[in-house]
Structure formats: structure tokens, C-alpha cells
Image 1 (cartoon, rainbow, N blue to C red):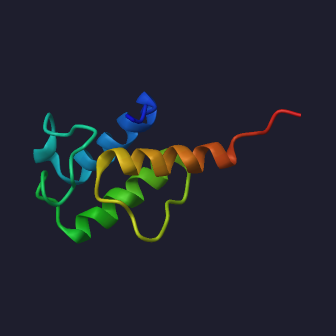
Image 2 (image 1 turned 30 degrees about the vertical axis):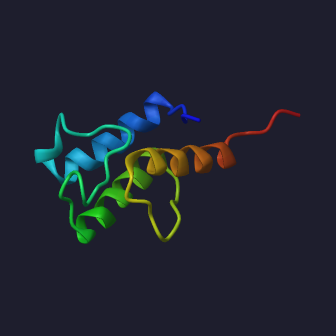
Image 3 (image 1 turned 135 degrees about the horizontal axis):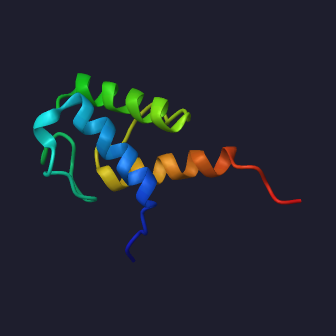
Length: 87
């Protein structure tokens, strides 16, 4: 079953990736693996996670996923947690 990604979250994740690793522009897709597909090292992964957290004003889990769609899912889950609940 395919996961539907929130476009704004996907855009924020892509922005964080390209801010840290400009050579990935145009190469990122939902199932891209940060290390295997995009050649991003572990220190850059930390910077990318920081960028996502800053852009979306959330805190991601300590052990980040290395797959773009999983980063988006984690970010969406955190955004849902902080969204006001209907009474």
C-alpha cells in the first residue's frame, strides 16, 4: 500500500536536503535513500534533520530514517501531534 506524502512536508524535506547537499537538486524522489542513492554522509544527515526540524518547527526522533518518504512520514506524525485538536 503506497503512502500519500504531504506535499508541503515533502518540499520541506527536499529543501533541507538540497540546502545541505546542493548536488542532490533534481535527484530526490520519495523512495531515495540518503546514503545509498544520494551519496549523503552521516554528518550531513544530522544537518538535514536539523534543517527539517527548523523548517517545520518540530523535533524528529533520535534515530532518523535514511529514506525520504520515511522522513516525511515522521515529520507529518510530529506535525499532527502538535496540531490543535477539535473539541
